[in-house]
Length: 355
Image (cartoon, rainbow, N blue to C red):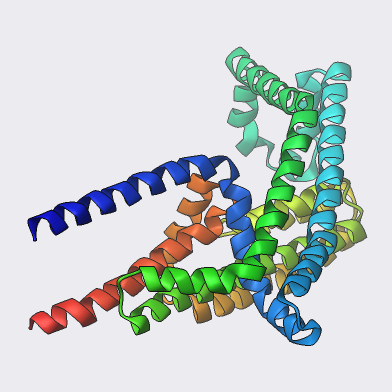
C-alpha cells in the first residue's frame, strides 16, 4: 500500500514537472495557439456542417482553414499595412509641422479657435503654463520618446513582419488540427480529468458560451463600430479615417465611454475645422449607430453567455487586456466564468453533502 502511494505521488509529480516543461516550450507560440483555439471554437459549427457535406473531416478542416486565411488573415494584414502607412504619414506631418513652426505658433493656432477664444480668460492659466520652459522640456522629451519609439518599431519592420508571418503559420497549422482532431482531444481530456461527467460538461459549456459571448458581444460589436466609424469619418472628410477607425475599435473595449471617446472629439473638431452640419451628422451618426452598440447590443449579447456580475466582467476584461494583451479579452472572462462554475460545483458536490 505504501509502495503504491509512493508510486502515485512520484508519477503525479513527474507529470506536473513535464507539463511545466511543455508549457515553457510552448510559450513562444502561446499567442497564436490561443487565437487558434478561440477562432476554432467560433468556427467549429461551420466545420461540422461542411464535414457532413464533403464526408471528410480532413478536407473540411482544410477548406475552413483556407477560408479563414482568405477572409480573416488577408483582410487583417491589408488593414495592418494601411494602418502603419497612416501612422507613418501622421508622424511625418508632425515632424514637418514642428520643423516649420515654433511651439508658440501652435499655441496661437489653438487660442485662435472660436471655442478657446471665447473662453480665453478661463484658459489663461493653462496657456500661461504651456509657455513655461518646464512644459516645453516635458513636451520636447515626450515627442522625442514617441519618435524614437516609432523609429525603433519602423526599423524593426522586417523582423516584425517575419515574426508575424511565422505566427500566422503557427495559427493556421494549429487551427487546422484543432478542427480535424479537436473533438477526439477533448474526449481524451474528459477521460483524464477526475470529475463527474455532468460537472465537466458544465465547465466546458461555460468556456464555450463565454468565448462566443466575448467574440460576438465584444469583438464583433467593436468591429462593427470601427466600420461604422470609418464610414462616418470618411463622409465628413476627416483625414486618416482608417487610423481613427482602428483607434475606435480598440477604444470600444475601454469603458465607460468606449467608442464615443474617439468619435465625439472628432465631431467637435469637425464643427470648428470642417463644417458645422457635418459635425452634426457625425454626432447623430455616432449617437444612434456607433454608441448604440456600446449601450444596448454588446451588453445584451455578452450577458446571455457570461453569467457573472458586471463589475467582475469589467475587471476580468480590462485586467485580461492589460496583463495578456488582446487575447486577454477572452482569457479574463473565461478564467472568471470557469471559476464561478467551479464554485457552484464545489457548493453542490461538497458543501451540501457535508451538511
